[in-house]
Length: 88
Image 1 (cartoon, rainbow, N blue to C red):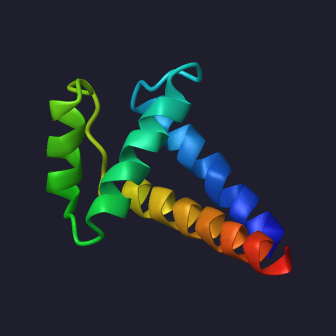
Image 2 (tube, rainbow, N blue to C red):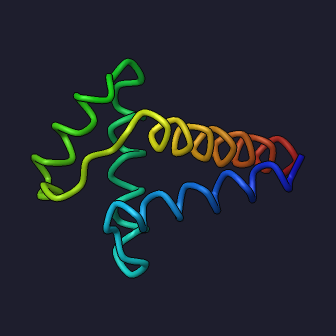
């Protein structure tokens, strides 16, 4: 199961690189996407892109597949945080 999530993250990073996101700014870009989705889980792809453009990511246009990879990655991260808190 862990390998599945590692693969998801690898594909996400690869897709973002293709879209022009450099490694050095990728964490900020991913945090921005995560923030939008935490604030409003019903955002459409075009709404996420609009929010990104508003923040200055005008040169980046997410596609549906890349957004779904990001969502899967965030869901995994959140489930790990919940698991850690219940084990404390």
